[in-house]
Image (cartoon, rainbow, N blue to C red; front, side):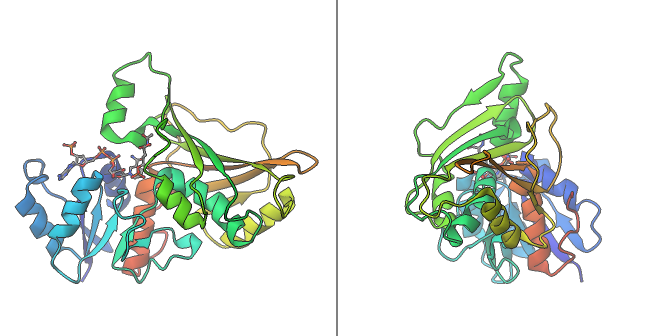
Length: 305
Ligand SMILES: NC(=O)C1=CN([C@@H]2O[C@H](COP(=O)(O)OP(=O)(O)OC[C@H]3O[C@@H](n4cnc5c(N)ncnc54)[C@H](OP(=O)(O)O)[C@@H]3O)[C@@H](O)[C@H]2O)C=CC1
Ligand SMILES: CC(=O)N[C@@H](CCC(=O)OP(=O)(O)O)C(=O)O
C-alpha cells in the first residue's frame, strides 16, 4: 500500500511548493483539506492521525498545536516551521550533515538561512579549521517569498519597495539552530536582508583566514567541503570564483545548494557563499528530500536538480 502524506498548511507558500513536488508521485498518496476545513481543528486532528506522514507548513504556534493533536504512534512528522529545530526528541532534517533522518519519527526541517550557513560552516568547525568560539558573522539576502504570504503581499502590493534590511534586534529565530548545529559557543552576528526577487537566497560568511589559529588556505577549505559533501546530489561545492553572483526577479526554482569559497591571492581573507532557493533546499525541497528518506523511497524523487 502507498504511504499517505497529509500536508497541513497546504495553501501556504511552502505547502504549495511541496504539493507541486509531490503532484506526479505514484509512490505516495497526498492528502490536503478543502479550503473550508483547512483550519478546522477536528478535521486536522483526523487527517493528522490517519496519515503515515504529515508535513507541517504552518506558523510555529500552529505547528506546535498540530503536533499536540497527534495521538497515533505510527504518524511520522516533518515540521517546516522553526518550532522544533533545537527541541529534544526531534532530528534536524539536514541529512548531508549526518543527521539520521531516515530512521526518525520527528524531523524538523532546517531554516532557509541556516541551510546555507551550516553547509558552509559546520564542516569547517568539525575539521578544526574554525574554532568553536570564533566570532562569526553572516550576511544574507533572501527572495521575498521567504517571508511567506505576508511578505509576498507586501512586496507585490508596493512597487516602490526595493529592498529590506531587518533583524536589528539581533535575536532572529534562526540563531539557535545556527549555533547548535554548527557546534559554536556563540551565535553568529546575523544580518538578513530581502530583495525584490520572488525566490532565491545568498548566505555569506566572511572569514579572516590570516586571523584564524589554523590559518586555513582556500584550498584547505574547499577540500574540507568537498570531503563533507562528496557524492551528495543536492550539495555542490564549486571550485570556480565567478566575478559576481546574480539573483533575478523571478528567481530559479531548484533544490540544489551551491557552495563557493572566494579568497584573495594571499589567502588572508575569504568569503564563504552559499546559494540556494529558499523554497527549494531552504523549505519545500528539503521537506520532500526528508520524506523520501523517511519513507525509504527514491531519495531524489520529485526534486528539482
Ligand atoms: N517561505 C519560506 O521560504 C520558508 C518557510 N518556512 C517555514 O514554513 C512555515 C510556513 O511558511 P510559509 O509557507 O512561508 O507561510 P505562509 O504564510 O505562506 O503559509 C502558512 C499557511 O498556514 C496556514 N495556517 C496558519 N495558521 C493555521 C492553522 N492554525 N491551521 C491551519 N493552517 C494554518 C495559513 O493560512 P492562510 O492562508 O489563511 O493565511 C497559510 O496558508 C513557517 O513556519 C515558515 O517559517 C521554512 C523555510 C523557508
Ligand atoms: C525573508 C524572511 O522574512 N525570512 C524569514 C525566515 C524564513 C524561513 O526560513 O522560515 P523558517 O524560519 O521557518 O525557516 C525571516 O527572516 O523571518
